[in-house]
Length: 196
Image (cartoon, rainbow, N blue to C red; front, side, top):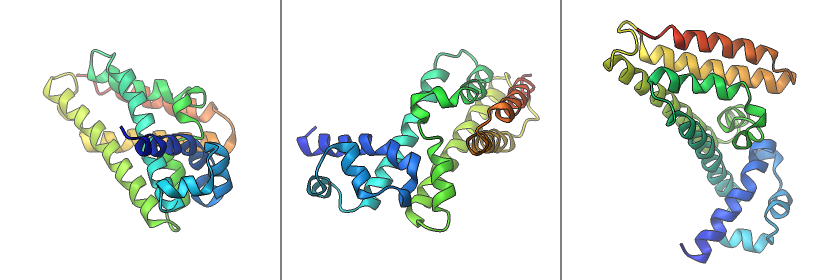
């Protein structure tokens, strides 16, 4: 990896949390300078615009969370136990470093839906990939006879993602984890009921 590539990665890693917490509009260039300790000229020497940094930061944040889920799921021996990782992790999401600032898909979707087309597209793509991943897990579970044959993989995938995103949003807005815990208890029961 070249020095320029390392610097680009450093900038993205250092600004990712700022963008996730403050959003694109709320993040000033001074925030980027403060978080990286680099000059404006140095940052612009590696990125053409704040937009380009924000898009890279979104990918960084999304990958960080996805990798965290994957690292927990790989330790599980069944599809059902892998799916149960979602409510287990979401119940404690504020304490997980990868979730600092909240869910990047939710945060970006909320802010960029009418204001930043490129970020909106990134969030929509991430949401779709996440749903597809869960849908494929469920299909594998049906094929291995671990999950009931009459389960609709697409419906369950959408339900899981929507329950997670809405529960996280309500917890962030209200500052209370009680409704999130109720939603994750329901999700856990739903996943367990998929078992054949």
